[in-house]
Image (cartoon, rainbow over all chains, first blue to last red; front, side, top):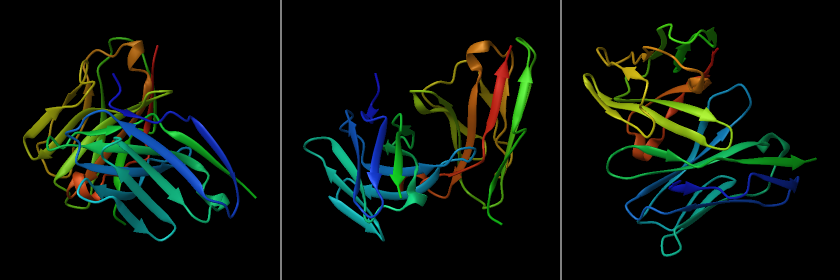
Length: 111
Length: 113
């Protein structure tokens, strides 16, 4: 049973618009959440993280929102750029330090 | 340059022939981990290590071994590879995985025939 789920395998948005990538989790013991970006033929790169004691964290064009009651987090990219086209993974961890990843969402930003 | 280096990048082997994928990091990170990526399943953790001589199982440890004799190295060993271990493997390291996330290597594509 997948503890971290990304239900949208792909997303296509116009350059300059907002991209919203969603992630749901089932384990209430998760207390840190992270987003990674992955280009083809490269390893994933860390984007942004959020602690469960917060509901929002911003870093430039990237904002992560956490709704603990709904066990849902989302990554907002504003404005979206063609270079943002990649696969995005959300991940979660608890005190065991195991990092559990979702299956990924492929984002395409159209010029 | 700060990086995680894994070798080889590509490997084709036969069932049952022992192999080792090496991983080295030059960032003095405490945490290291191995993941495999399969279509539709995302990245699944195989093993992780919180320090020298301290390792623990991830979600899919069966058929794999690891060792952490030095801080910088974390090799992945497949004693008797099988076709279901055909996958894309990533090694990663972190100063503190929960907050800073992992730095990943470029991946090793393994095919077991």
